[in-house]
Image 1 (cartoon, rainbow, N blue to C red):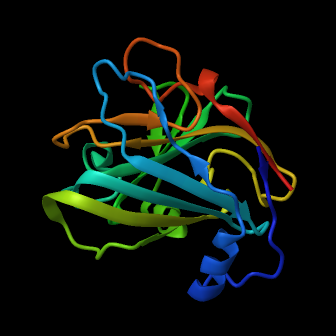
Image 2: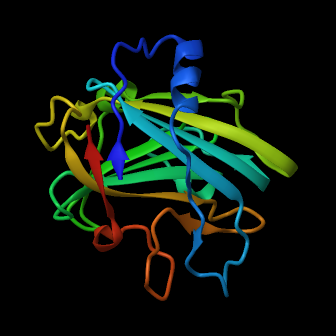
Length: 213
């Protein structure tokens, strides 16, 4: 997939940012890879572009079950209503997982494997701006016609074990996910399919190429 570049955008201008996202074709996160055991599939899509200095990523979610119980960064964010961006800058040899709850708590780590991980420092986590549409307060599971968005502004330096200084011309591999392990209806959706028996997002062998303009 080509990640378009938008020149001259003030990423602190929320109106301009909204207009920029509207110019990007949405991509569905709709692969229900383990449908027999986990058939529930909320409606999820994302839009992505970059400015050179930042990767801009917006998830749009419509789901029946939404919860935000995790209270800190690098916590068990996948147990809440969670959206995820896994990315490898070195062809799948290592990868980073950006996992974000619906109110903006993030887990970020660099992985040599699922088990071998180095977690981001508070300084690196703070460099990734997270803008949720929901209020930034914890809540128990809400059942209904729940809609929310999560916008991420990711500097290349957030890939903290590599030396990426700009998104211009970068080529990475990635997959994007939606999950909620402890919701009433747990679900595990991906952008690109994952052909294994049990849910596992830590599979860079199923990442897809992103080519940045």
